[in-house]
Length: 135
Image: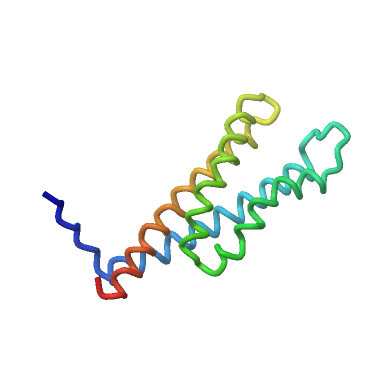
């Protein structure tokens, strides 16, 4: 016997949550990009590597996601949930090193915030679109 479909929340309930989760997503996205740039350009010991190359490589995945996030696409937010796990892993491994502990915890916290906010935005955006379509 198939389960009954759970009713969708109202548009009035979804609209402020969409706005808040999108704002939190963009804020944590920009904060994560800024943290990576500032850390690698000023504090990181790159052992002779060019700082701009390291920053470019670390920011490339975020740069690929940026247009979709800025336009508010639900699929871009969903892809962000996959990509941001790389930064979480990097942050946790950096937190183990005493010289990079603060950077590591900040990166892990920002990536976790970005993951949760993007996940909630994706869920609520799809529900909002289904509700607008008359479902």
